[in-house]
Image (cartoon, rainbow, N blue to C red; front, top):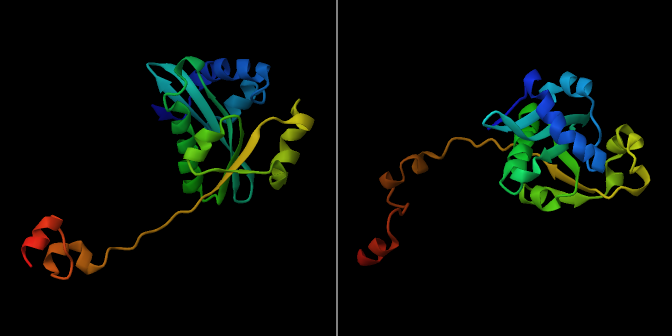
Length: 182
């Protein structure tokens, strides 16, 4: 189940993040940083265990980042990462953001959710905000992906489509039935 974390989840989040930070695949986050940003974080929990986490971080007006996406390696390729990224997309839409991006090693996951590859230099706010403290600053091996966020409001259906059977100009049903009535 995907949800916002509580203070009781911080140890589980750290258990996922610390090994990846030590391996250099995510930025290090302290306990204090996680505790003070719980509202920005999602966890995927099953049977009381945190199996995955991701954060949605404001970068600049209209731009938000999916950060610290980590899934327990024993539960990889089960849709947990996709579910976490989708939760970030949904919240970004709800909050009114125009674009969402990530720096990632799993481009196919993001591509399935509508992201496309972009140049890191097109994300200057991110580069100046976080990349300056990264140990891989000058030789970053992550790929930047970005997606425009569009919310489409659908008006009510035209009256004829509300009850298509009532309008003889609108054909519904089995196409073979239409041929037998010729």
